[in-house]
Length: 95
Image 1 (cartoon, rainbow, N blue to C red):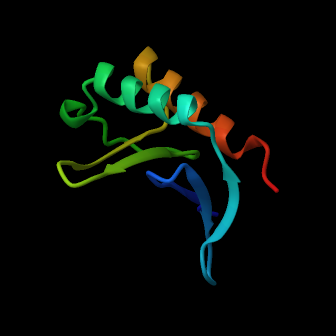
Image 2: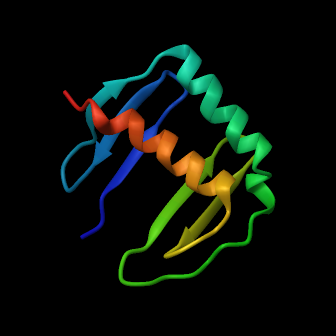
Image 3: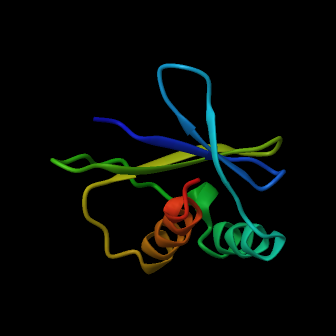
């Protein structure tokens, strides 16, 4: 089962489903700044991860300047796992 969330520049986190997107959280400005910094630090736009497995994770960054997605089942890239963990925290306190 695919679960997909979207974080926009207004700091709102939406859960995507069959119906309309459902707002589940709003994060602090400092959290959004930290996420953007980690995206830059990781060199996200140049990451080449495209592997799948029983449990596949993905992150897609879409902005005016970038539209890039990575997929992985296992990775030792600490920037990727750190970014994923940080993004998970944005949905931990769903309304």
